[in-house]
Image (cartoon, rainbow, N blue to C red):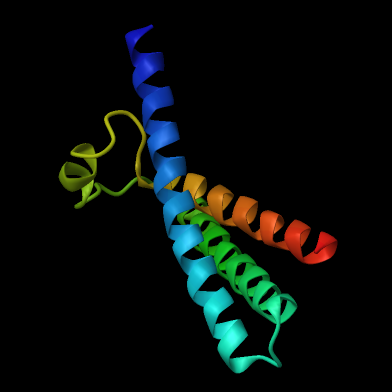
Length: 115
């Protein structure tokens, strides 16, 4: 039971870190879309949505490459990662970050469609 609590805590923490990174990227892309686009909120939302989905696709591509590689190499960053996550590894944390980027991109798409 204690391990499940630690796992859930790590998953939520990874999702929140990914969400913070995705929101920061979305805000930067939104502002760049406002400044360099044709103007208007629609241009900013489209730039943010497209950029966040592109970052999510790159994260998922990186994650798939990590999962395809045969054999488990010892992680050099394992000690540093254990300071932040007790149970999950780097691949799970990267997957949760990719999920967060997809969620933020979907929210930007929803806002663009209905605003």
